[in-house]
Image (tube, rainbow, N blue to C red; front, side, top):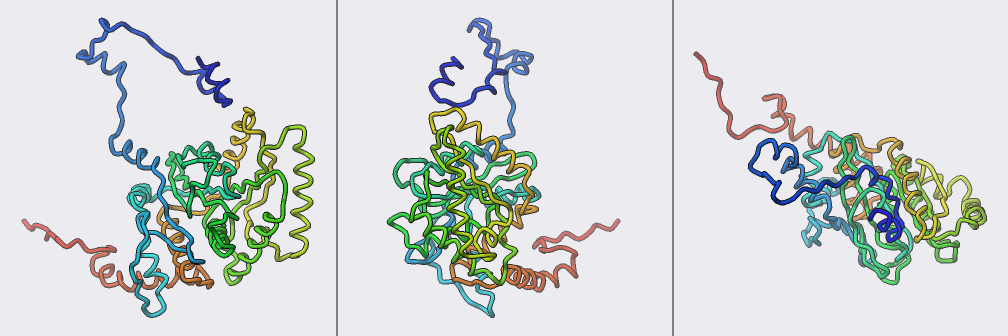
Length: 368
């Protein structure tokens, strides 16, 4: 059975070697026996199981329309007019951004470190499929256009929360160059690892796309430290005999693009976490799936960008708010302003009660 599975899916099946099946007759079933229940039943924490179930449902968090970046609220467009007060309009917009059921999951695992992995590239090149097999998400995949804007999914492990972001294909007929730039900027600022899937060769469209990366790098010149992602370019469907030649040709053409911009090129500016180029095996080759383990190991060893889920939520929402209103100022300045405003609001309660928030029902201590 396992051999048939390997042949039909072309996937590694070594983990199934430890899988065993036991068979008993119906007459031997004794479900009322306590010892039988302990031996053959499984126990799960219902709350944890529901969380894992919710993590399997991706949520759309942003779209680009009319040359604008538009954050969503609980997966839906919001026509709410944001109040702009005393220069803190970014904070007001960020407060109205919500990630639906993921908000509760982030708060529940607020102490865990967060790593963000994303997938970008041209339309219909298998971005979602690769992301699903890398971290275990369930994004829709299709030979046609099936992803609009940005979709989020979570994978909870003992040590980390992996946030997977699936991006709409670039250079599509439905999107303008400016909308592509918004998606690229958001991806680069938020992600820890970016999988950029590309066709066999660098054509004029891809060269233009890289130029848009360069244009985007210039927008946040006042805050260069926000770009810490690793860019991993994946050249799809490369036969094994052509891997070295294809990689060499790709590196040469990419070097020419970078050389024209000098020290201010987009790779140096936007991808300070590192840079890789990997020719990827053909889809019907078992090596396609084995190659993913190399990327997963690199992701696991990569330094964490977010020390906890609260930091990830705040930073991501502020970045989305800044992109919405095209605010290219320093992210750190916005975070400081938000922190100061929060401290002012909490100061009286903190001094009086030593708490961030006062319980409306305060019980006096009983005196004997």
